[in-house]
Image (cartoon, rainbow, N blue to C red; front, side, top):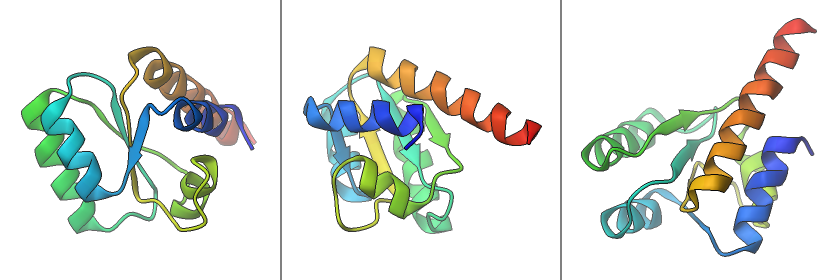
Length: 109
């Protein structure tokens, strides 16, 4: 597991993550801040719904190179996860930074 997915797992263990389009939308209506993470193989409909909700709440949506299976595994689920919302600002920033570093390292290879 890479560093970004490790941060996502840490956030999940701390109770600072919700997963799934509907749960993320509910939490986004209640909370401010954080980061919504989208899997690379999330459907166009799911991404559009996430964009609409995130835009209304000023919460960034980060499309990642990680698959639904990888995100699901990182948060401790046996099922795939298309969207995850990290509530904690610090863990959200750490995930975004690590995901960017992972992406840069993959481009170099």
